[in-house]
Image 1 (cartoon, one colour):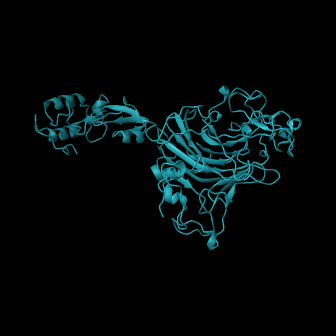
Image 2 (image 1 turned 90 degrees about the vertical axis):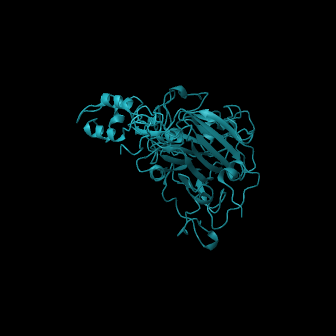
Image 3 (image 1 turned 30 degrees about the vertical axis):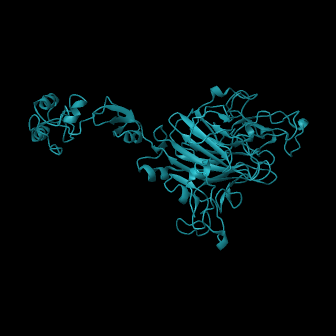
Length: 495
């Protein structure tokens, strides 16, 4: 059976339709075997077989809990492994609850161990750059009817957000209360009030200006009905509660509900005429975020044959990253006009505890599924440092970018003023392939004596034995290389 790559399946690079994964395969192993992190939820069963086999319900495998994820709830329900409406069989993750409360939940995961396994033990986080973009992709399925329009669910990649969200302070989804919607036709069994998320433009009523919001260490995308700043929909036919019909993304400071033309299309191998529209019914909405140094490309397709939508927007948060979240974290109700949680005991009847509310979703917004969540690309995060090239020129760059530019990275935190960029043969200072009196003149000016650091940064290149001085030992190595003009030096003579 022909196997398609993940990008071909998700974004139509190949013209052939996606194929069913064979029973012995799993989506992650087949499509993204080198990903930093990949979760297709297909191995969350009792006694899964060895890689690459997935769970097989036909042989009696039953799904288990989300081992390795820190699953929490807003009001009595946590995400769990599901066996319907999955982008790849047999399992996916269900977010939200279909009971009368339509409660919201979330799961977090620190991925520092995965980062260290990919980039080395020195790296506990990763960074995205223009040369090494970081990609996050997942599928979102709203099941039947209009659940995706009424859903409140997103996937985030962040920094230091792998634990519990306790007090709701500075979350992505802090809110103020809506007008009373019952007179407009709200027939839900709620109080008639709905949350309105404040981190958006234009600023909803009673919200502080988003320009005064802090930047949060997170990038996110999903479907958020509570971004609806007019949830009553008075004078309209249809639902009189919150809904959204387009993909939403978070740039580190605010949410955008995307439309075609809101941000420029950076172009690509395929035209992108779509309008980021979330479709009703059993549709696997496919999302890919390509995070770069200061911007993010968003690609979105509803189903394998739906229209591609694509745009590039500037980012308020530019990394690093080391954690994932899926679902809807507990938010707080804000004091009108401020970013302060008001600590209301009942939050207008929408929840029961102070500050953090057990928010219920909009009617019909339960049981949305996430599948094929993957993170790949990027590089291990450390401070930028000096990047030296063979001609002794220097720029300051992240280590991964330096290596892609065929440079040699110095220690993180160094600069071109503090790090010496030495010739390939350090004794051949003028790089004319020989070691002669011209090179000796340079070396003589660098002599510092035993226990005395070299007099200048470039003179660090004369410290051949790397003991932080230029002394008789270094002079002996220099003489071992000095053969005179136009006599090629031995590349190993100073070793």
